Image (tube, rainbow, N blue to C red; front, side, top):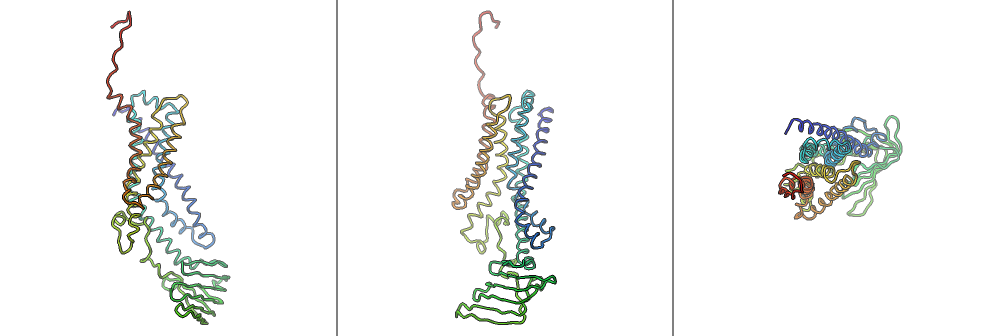
Length: 383
């Protein structure tokens, strides 16, 4: 590689790198803003601190980056190379002796960097962040939310526990309390109390009910038992969903757990879904190279036009949109039919191979083809 070619590649790669950082940051900020709106209600209406809000939502960012990184690579490569073509810089680079492969090399370098970052995200950072997010969310739902009861609202502490408070005094006293407790399958209890207050006992939130009654339905006999009390404490944390027993989502599992799930925890019917997730984590970063090559092939191939051409970039965008949608369809199909798992890898590798062939085939053919035969000499011409 000559010094001039190295400088040109460095110039293009610098533009691509800066563009990738800007586009990725912009897309992540947009997605974070839309996704974090569902947690704003905890801050505005339930008193959750802004620091906890930022900690909770920041754990979503690695997954966002892993999803949009191949798309950001495609957008940046297509935009930068289209700008180089419009500004005639590609024409100057070709006149300087750069081949199609040399012109495409900066995009491949950027895609390789994105691929390495994608593997770091998919195999390590995203599972760790997802586990932290779900654990944080679990703690808020089962412990903190008990102290954030709203007036006049039925607050579901869990699927089996609901609390209603008619009013809350300034000193924290609760008025008009209803607790519907279905955590014991044998007896569904409903408690009514004139007043009460929230207390924290060894890290477990409880509501202390004063001057109330407990109505309990005995499912074996069908009798309704009513018990009046002066004071009764009800634990608000869901005991059946403790941290040690919390169900782990697929996104939290490591690659080893996905390939070798524990049969005591994961039913056999879900093994296909876990296997698809494992192959998706390994194959998805490779789409960065495929998307980059699709963008480069759309700009560098075809006939030259003075005012540029929008047809090929638009076709490239449609192709990538179809590939993204196809990736979701392939994952769903492979989850139901494990024999079709190679489709996950075919989806990741085939677009890049086709784009590379479209980009380099004319150059290879012209380099390996025979020289054209010399035509006959015209009269008066010199041999």
